[in-house]
Amino acid sequence: MLTCVALMAHFAIAQQAPAPDPSALAMNPATLPPASPRHPYKFQFQSHGGIPPVTYALVEGAPPRGTTLTPDGVLSGTPSAPGEYRFSVSVTDSSRPPQTASRMYILRVVAPMLMQWKRYAKVSGNRVDGSVVVSNGTEDDFDFTFIVLAVNEIGRATAIGYQRISLKSGTDAFEIPFGETLPRGAYDVHVDGVAEVPDKDLIYRSRLQTKEKLQVTVGP
Image (cartoon, rainbow, N blue to C red; front, side):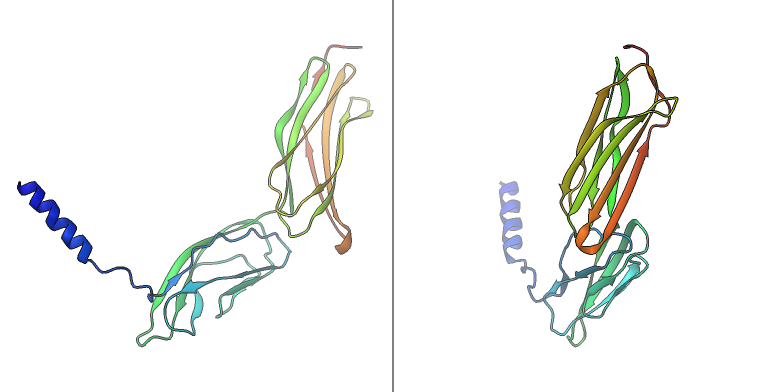
């Protein structure tokens, strides 16, 4: 009986607790879009509650070098180097006394075009297979050309992969396979990716290469 009374008292107190004040100042949560080195970047922070006008400022950490935060909450500029940047932004309103709130954000600066091994090149019988993933971290669509060559010990190159595709803005880890049967020999595999933005006369290049020679020991 005492337990029921205690529970009823708890619920009564909970019902009497004041609701959060909708006028309280707070920074809006946000996932910052990724940036690219040497590419213009712009993001508008937002807040709610409080009495306008409001002013924004950095209070901890730092955004990428080459970018600045203006008092009206715009982070803009041209990041100089890739990396993950953690920083806190505060907002202060015009109340008397003023209200202040802050929130931590993360901005990732990634290469405009990123190409990585998905399945490292390997020999299966007399065939060399593998795949890579490519990402487009810019605001532009890429005219992307992908070429894979297997080069033997006397310098003879054999194409074992080729594609030309439209790699859309924001594409993350798009997989491209390659593979071909080869004569006996020891091969270095070279993977080249070339991304073009014709309207802006921009070209990005990336290359991967096997660390060791791949031995094809069966076949002609």
